[in-house]
Length: 252
Figure 1 (cartoon, rainbow, N blue to C red):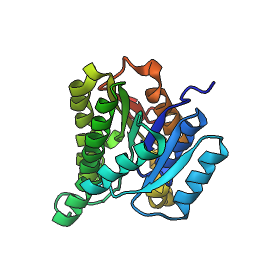
Figure 2 (tube, helix red, strand yellow; figure 1 turned 180 degrees about the horizontal axis):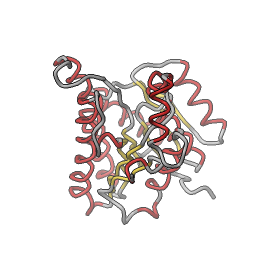
Figure 3 (cartoon, helix red, strand yellow; figure 1 turned 30 degrees about the vertical axis):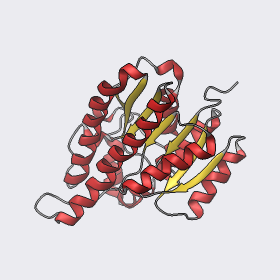
C-alpha cells in the first residue's frame, strides 16, 4: 500500500518546475492530484499524463491564484472531481528582480499578488473545505531560503517569501486544534525554468555552487520528497514549521 493512497491534493503552479516535482512525488505515493496553472498548455497536459502513468489519477484545473473567484472555483472543482481535499500545496510563484530604488510599484504588487496573496487565497478556501470535512488536512507552503536570509537584487521576492514564512506560523496556530497542519518548505537553489537564466552565467553558477555545501544544486524531486513527508498522517505533530531544503546553504 502506498503511503498517500486515498488522499487528494491541489498543487498550484504544478505544470512544471518544483510544483510538478511535488505532484509527481505525491502521485507516486498514491495521491490523486489536481494540477494547476494560470494557463492550460502542453506542460500542464504532460504533467497530468505523467501522473496517470504512475497509476494515480489527475486532472488539470486552470486558475489564477491572485483572483478570488478562480481560487474558489479551483477548490470547488477539485472536490466535485475527487470528493474531498486533503492536501494543499501553495507552490505558484514568480521572481521579480530589482533593488528597492529600481522596482516599480507595479512590479512590487505583481510579486506580492502571486507569491503572498495567492497563498492567502488558496489557504482560505482550502481551510474552509477541510473544516467542512472535519477530518483535518495538510497545507504546505513553498517559501524559500530567501524568506529567511537576504539575497542582493531581489528585494520584493525576499519580502514576499518572508511573508509566506511568517504566514505559515500564524495560520498553523489558528487551525492546529482542527487537525489541520500548516508548514512551509524553504528550498535553496533548485534547477528549474525560474533559475535557468541565473545558472546560465558561469560565474554566478560557480558562486552559488560554492555556497551549497552538498556540492550540487537541488532538483524538483528533492522538494517533492520533502512535501511527501509533510503530507503524511505521520507528520501530524509537526505544524508551524519551516523545513529548509537547501543542501546546507543556511547552515554556513
